[in-house]
Image (cartoon, rainbow, N blue to C red; front, side):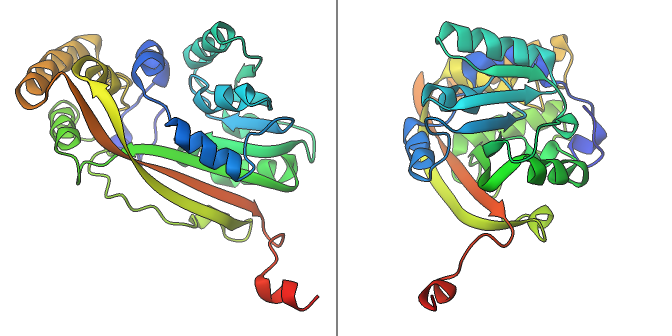
Length: 273
């Protein structure tokens, strides 16, 4: 994949990181899924589409809750890993290698369409009409993110600084913690139902934090194998100097829940009925 507005136009391929992605990206804390369930997202009996599913993190969690889930991703290696993980967990998920923009589902088909860490990669001009078609009346579009907070966490900052030495154009660094409640593409298409920002201290070991950075767009998805190995060796030495073997890294999780524009009823409208 290559986009001029991401990493200075440098090409990256998530499929190159599938093994590390599966093993070391921590996924969302269990309390996060409880929040989603409380919002009526990914529950038993729902039809759910997971866009940019990667290794199926969200898709598998929703399937474990009893939802009927389809997961799509552009990277065949990611889909292969997602299928393997689902099988090992005894879960049934329909995984398909497909660009999000190429989906073609029947009208009013899904209760929930979700995208974890992936929506900003998509061409919304192509995708939004397809989402509006595929969502049921009253269905929800759910975006989730899980990001470390380098402005609050010294370990995250130090690791990012090292990434930038190897890939100066990486645009994933220095996340401020700010996300808009309503993204520009939503205007005229979706109304915001709810927006949540939650901070978690997520546990790591030096080994798992190293693996997490290999499974980073700026490293494993973009650099040569030789440069990845050099980065990892230098990262290991850095962590040995600044971290105990076990530590936590402060992360922020977010949930954006949207519904088709015009379906939300204001309190004022309700009181007049």
